[in-house]
Length: 439
Image (cartoon, rainbow, N blue to C red; front, top):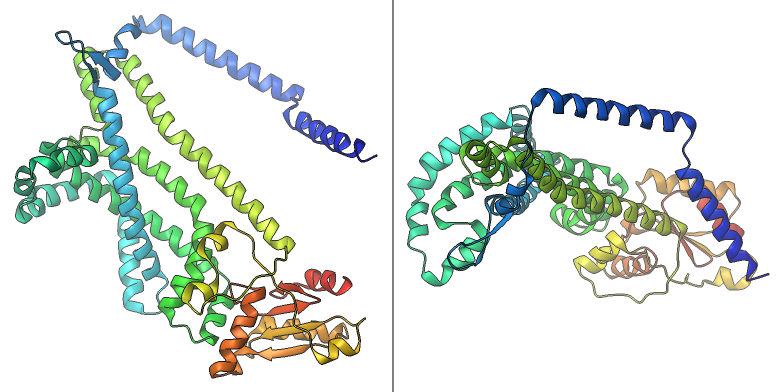
């Protein structure tokens, strides 16, 4: 019997998979019509264009051998691809920093900071990127970089630093223009990252702010230790998608003669007239850069969704108290983002020992929290006797010890935290409370 169960499960899984892959007649008809339309368009284009393809000339644009020495060198397209990768990585990092700062300014309680963040985001998002490219190019390259003496500093770099500088920023003679492209693209993409950060922070439940405030956390510590770890987990998939957009948007800096992939392709087309071959290869190179990132973003999104389902199922692991630190009070960042929430065994009270059949219930709550009030009212309706501790009314060492006790069951220290027969129910959830009481 035990050997038969897995085979039945595998059969059901295989049947479900085959059902998902099965094509209905309408699907087959649509695919057939699409294929026929593509063939007709391709055939008609080939007859009208009278174009002579020359794919044999393409490999030398990726890599070629020196005629005199036989050494291999990177071609113009491969060189442009490397420049695109450098530009995307540096601009993505800058956009993450600028976007995080602007996003936090957008949710600041101070009007001045909200106006500053909103002005930056709205100005960039409502202006064509091409206009911003020219504007920042003329300002940064023509004025600021020259005034700062950056171009002179590049020429005076020690010889030992030439290799690392070329690896990180490309040819030294093109570094000022490359830095201009990084700053410009970072400013453009940072406005979109700012909205992702703002939405991520605002998606965290308000009870987390209330709990941190009740524990005496200042706002900066609440953001750093409580809000951002939870928000960053939700922001990861859209941030990955935004990086893909950064890779695609990097092509726009070709208009200011930055020798990235698109610029190199334009130069090759002007010199060889192999328009279709060059742009087809450029299409494949961009696809090779963006597609893995998109697949990674989709996989990360599924992983986080699966992790959320596991967390909500309530696995219970006995843990020991950690040190009283910002990270300990709110749990480890990595485990908060990717791991499971540890739980601990419930404390035993005199009422529990007197009636071994009665459920052991203890509620950690805030006196001003509406969810805590609803949870206690629901327990009263169920006729359950419980012990309630209002953490915000405690002071000194008593509050510290209570927080440590709550942290054993709920590392995020959010309220209400309801302990029922050793099982922690975080927040007011009637179904989970009922399930825990039945056990």
